[in-house]
Amino acid sequence: MKQKLRFLIGRVKAGRLGEMRRQTIWIYQYAKHYWLTMIFYTLLGMVGTVVALLTSLISRDLVDIITGRQTGEIVKTFSLMIGLNVGTTFLNQLSDYASAYLSMKVDSEIKADIFSKILVTDWESLTTYHTGDLLTRWGSDASAISNGVLNFLPNAIIYLFRFISAFAMVIYYDPSFAIFAFLGMPVSLLLSKTLLNRMVNNNKRSAAMGAKMSGFNQEAFSNIQTIKAFDLIHLYVARLKQLQKEYIAMKLDFQKMSMGTSLLLSTVALLVSYASYGWGIYRVFTNAISYGTMTMFLSLSGTLTGTLHNLTSLVPTIIGLTTSAGRLMDIIEMPREDYSQNEEVDAFFEAHKEHGISLYVDNLEYAYNNGTQVFAGASLEAHPHEVVALVGPSGEGKTTMIRLILSLMRSQNGAATLGGNRGHHSLTFSDCKSADDTDSDSKSTDAIPLTPSTRKLFSYVPQGNTMFSGTIAENMRNVKPNATEEEIIDVLKLSCAWDFVRKLPDGIDSKIKERGGGFSEGQAQRLSIARALLRHSPILLLDEATSALDVATERKVLRNIMADDYPRTCIVTTHRPSVLNICERVYAIRDKKCVILNEEEIEEMVKGF
Ligand SMILES: Nc1ncnc2c1ncn2[C@@H]1O[C@H](COP(=O)(O)OP(=O)(O)OP(=O)(O)O)[C@@H](O)[C@H]1O
Ligand SMILES: [Mg+2]
Image (cartoon, rainbow, N blue to C red; front, side, top):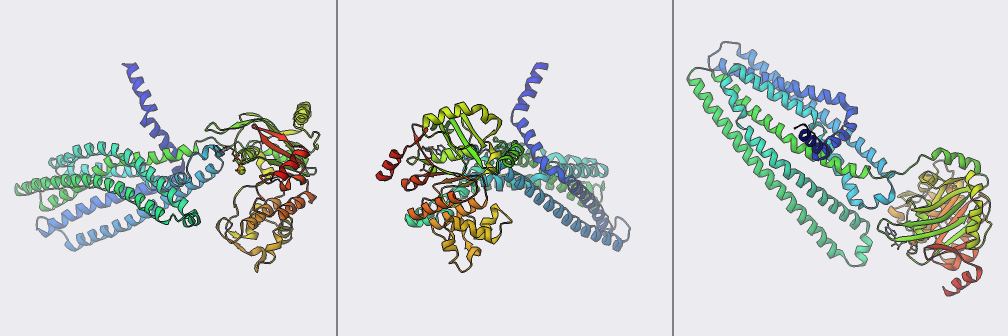
């Protein structure tokens, strides 16, 4: 027996209920800062209940005075009732205000917290979700929780209090009426069980549909140019209509369900009220109660049926909330990036900022989650005042190497470290490997591994347009808030962007539209490089960052970067061999390794281009 009980408790803990408990605790970690407001709201609800019950008492007196059963001051009683009604109106407003305040506060708290957590979530895990799905979870699920957070404790307490006090009043004045309080109960309970199952199902459907719609909207609006260019207007309009059709069908399904329940509940409520009406009339005729008491019972029976329904329907509501919490927990419980090395990295930077920082990638192995093996034993190194190129056909792994260097992803094997500036000793791949091996002791005293914390030592210009909307100066100051106009102009000159910026009527205060709009691809690339240079990081990573420039400008930008006094280590990836002969070293990705090309090989590449 004991064992059976333990087994049952174990199942509950592991099952849906255990999960719900975890989700509830999670929700309350946000709501708990507002416990005072919650207590205030609960008290308001309870006072509201007392006032409503008093109102029914007063209205009983009023009816009895009018029908002559009771003698009393009609004006005084009437004024009291008006006073209570006005009081109820104020109480309702106050309670609405408290509930709006609480839901907005919890909403912002959840959203801000999840936003900052998403930003430090492991990048590769995060990419398994469509951004539309992430947005729906972050937006709709968080709102569902904040709107319903009062439904857990405060509303449950208020409803329970209302039910018990109304019931007590019925018992006090005429216990025979008490039976009507429970007449609706079986139906309410039965309904809540069906509702519960449906609710879980509906929540899942609704969330999946929301993610689909938001994904579609987001992709369509950010690709209007492509939609037009490929003449996909009809296709996209048709797709939207199809999605809307699915959405409407789903919503109508939900509506039918709620119609069914409402109809059933209203019928039950009507039956209960007719029954109590009949019983009331009988009691009045037999002189057991007064007219006034009968009207009071009628209103109380309405309160009891309504409150009972409210109480039972809290269950599906809570299920909905915990489901939303579960969907949010899915994202924030993904692996986090480890920023624990921040202090070591700061100290390391202080020690080496004068002479610059070298990068060592040693025997790296990496495969994406889907099994695509990109590197097996890849090694490379780069030192201050060098521009090192990483070349290879499309899809060979250039961007992957940059992501690994930035610790956006973790390699499965091998080491990637930063060290002080010791210059380059080897020119061939095999030399490079042996040099690394013999150096390993000296490196360990003066080297730190690449982690998310070391990311602050890098500037990165990715493929594609990455300018934000705002002015050129604002974009620059994003990475260095106190940059002077001169500093901005200096980096614009280095990246050959000053040539066109100085001709703009507003100069560095010219507006950039969404995703670099208003500028050509090559211009936006030069602005991105300027922004990266302004950050003054010891290591600069350019991923095809000059691909849209003409060869002459591309070479000029790289030469400017090399000529700069700052001890910068620069790695560029490129398809184009035209800049290779100005780089210190060229690595080609071959057989999942990085091979140093000699001069003939580089010449051959340049010729073959
Ligand atoms: N997120 C990802 N998940 C799984 N595989 C990926 C992912 N990103 C890239 N890959 C695969 O890894 C390989 C290397 O891709 P990568 O983007 O590094 O190539 P690349 O050399 O930068 O190409 P390009 O010159 O076209 O930019 C490709 O085969 C690609 O299909
Ligand atoms: Mg790439």
